[in-house]
Length: 209
Image (cartoon, rainbow, N blue to C red):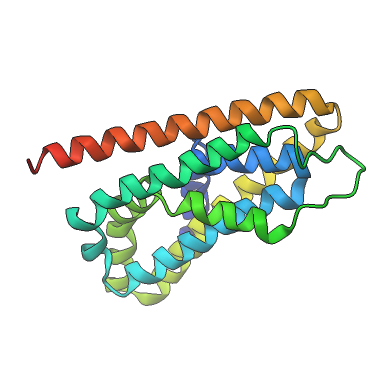
């Protein structure tokens, strides 16, 4: 249990910094409520679970190859640019105020979470940081690997629920115009992340020219 709770704290620490997933969760939480914000988080965790399975099978070394990682920077930039543009373009659409019925589908928000999570930032982080930790625990004790993985995922889940609870409470005090402008800010941040990914892609390519 001590190992589990230690990695719950690690999972919380991972999720705390503001990243593309956090921005998208916040946007969906403000526009459509807790469930849709959580759908984004679940989409992100689906990719996290897939990466844990891949790491346990020894594919971390393949994911760490430059020929795999470099194109992923560009692919991730395209996904985030699309989501950022869509956020700004449709900032005044699909806004559901507290107490109103949500028309947007759960799957749509879940899909956005997957698109944001399939980014090099997330992949590189899991492979380079937790790839070593998970691989070490898997090699020494398979049950330890499962406990560590569950602890990290539980920490991320606790962060998502806590963040979205705060957003749900705050949302009750916001009107449609305020949510619209917060959505535009979210879109700008996502485009900013896309620009950073393009920069990393260019820097990575320069190393091999």
